[in-house]
Image (cartoon, rainbow over all chains, first blue to last red):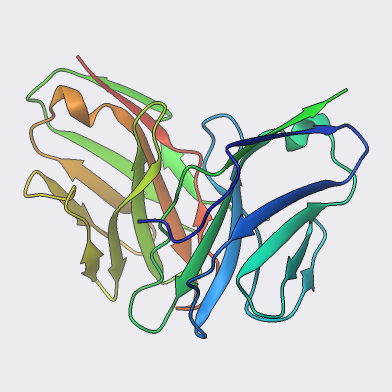
Length: 112
Length: 113
C-alpha cells in the first residue's frame, strides 16, 4: 500500500507556481521521497527525488520538512502541459529492488 | 535523451491467446521492470528483473506471466493464455543502478476480446 497521502485534485492558473503537498508521516530514515507524473495514460515520468535536503532540477523543486513527515513539489511556472496526475512515493532501497508503489496521486489541472 | 521503447503501442488479442509485449530498455541499464495500469486504476507493479533473473514479483504475476531478456537489448513480457481482465496498459521501466530513478516507456495498450 502507498505510504503517502495526497489531495485528490488541485487547480493552478497557467504561469503561476503549482505547489503539490504530500504527507508521509511514517517515513523511515532510509526512505527517499520520489515524485513522478503521468500525463494522460502515458508512462510515468520521473520528476525529482530527495532524502533530507531540498532539491531542485530543471523541472521542479522539492521541499522536504525538517522532520521529513511531509514534502511539497513546486512547479515554478505551470503550463497547460503540466496538467497530469502527480505521484508522491516513498522508497527504501535497503530491502527491495526499488519497486515503486504508486498510489492515486493528485490530479493537477492547469487552467488558462 | 535515451528512452525506453515499447512495441506495439496497441495490441488486440482474443481470450486464450498468447501475447508477447516487447520493450527495449535504455542501453546501459541493468534493472528492468513491468508495471500495468487497468483503465482508471492505479499503476501496479508486476515484476522486477536483474542479472538475468526475477528479483521480485507481485501477486498479479502468476504462472500465466513470464519475462525474458532474450538478447542484450530486448526485455519481453509474455502472457500465456490471456483473459479479459488482462486488458490494461503495460509499462516497461529500467534503471542503471540500484538506487537510480526508474524510467518508463509509454506503454502497450493490451485489449483482450
